Length: 153
Ligand SMILES: Cc1cc2nc3c(=O)[nH]c(=O)nc-3n(C[C@H](O)[C@H](O)[C@H](O)COP(=O)(O)O)c2cc1C
Image 1: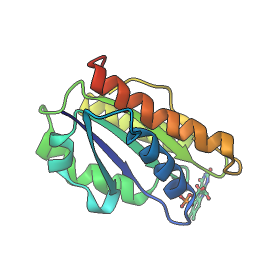
Image 2: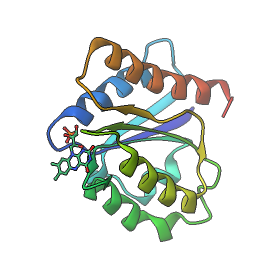
Image 3: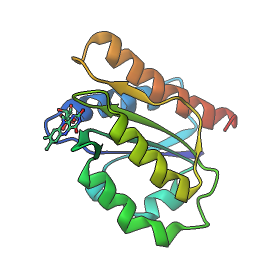
Image 4: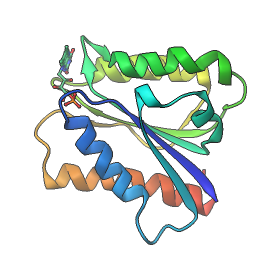
């Protein structure tokens, strides 16, 4: 079995909806070899990162940065996992009001410290949540889970 961690923050629900779709994709019935932990950033910790073979991060953009909750997750976990999580595959989804670039650049900078390996381009959703957005989120989750199961990452 491979382990996939989905860790996200949402205040007003957009990123929660996206996270739910990512989770739906990652737990598709065709994928049997992947265990998924689906956690709010405030509820996740270093042990979850050590457990994971791959991670999907989801956050809104707040004040031109990732959400405080996601930053708190990184603040709490970095020194506990430093050197033990290198090259774990990851990808990111961001539901933002403008272009999401502040959230993305802050995430990318911090994630460089963990030395995770990006395996999919960031999914940034600025506008309304639509069926197409939902499908893209599901694809992100399914793609990561299927890649882990197949040993591609
Ligand atoms: C305090 C606060 C600050 C925000 N700052 C930004 C920002 O700098 N850039 C941006 O694109 N959106 C910003 N937004 C909008 C949120 O990113 C956007 O509404 C997002 O979809 C919220 O996600 P959520 O519903 O999962 O909480 C801000 C929202 C709040 C509440």
